[in-house]
Length: 167
Image 1 (cartoon, rainbow, N blue to C red):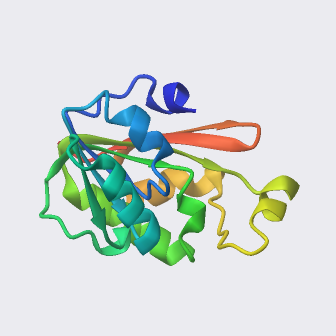
Image 2: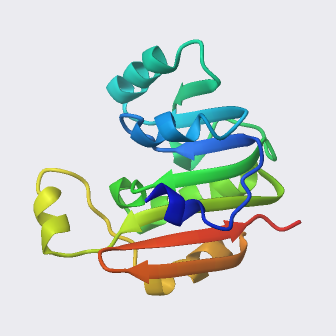
């Protein structure tokens, strides 16, 4: 998942990770970047990740990615791994996209991956939030949020995306 998502994208040295959950991708990403900030809305997950990342190059912030607590142009790049479908509405997903664009430096890249709707996906999320993103309209949503050069690539069960804050 990680190599495919990050293939061909330069995220710079100061990375924002949106919705790391338990931090499985955080563990891998922190070795690739000088500085990282991971924003997690769930209190227990954020606290657990903070304890694990204490003393590392990762700052963990408990917060809502639809209202990021950072100044504009704070990060060189941003990532979101299989978390967009956990945002409870398309409107809030769009707000998250706009916030990520706001906090990226000009020319900064946003890359990620998410799952597409299917039987196994619905079964896995029976007692969980699941608002899947339509890959066929996602490039347009990224543009509406302020990004340029969006690309979306679909594979069975998932899609990856890349987009850039205008330089």
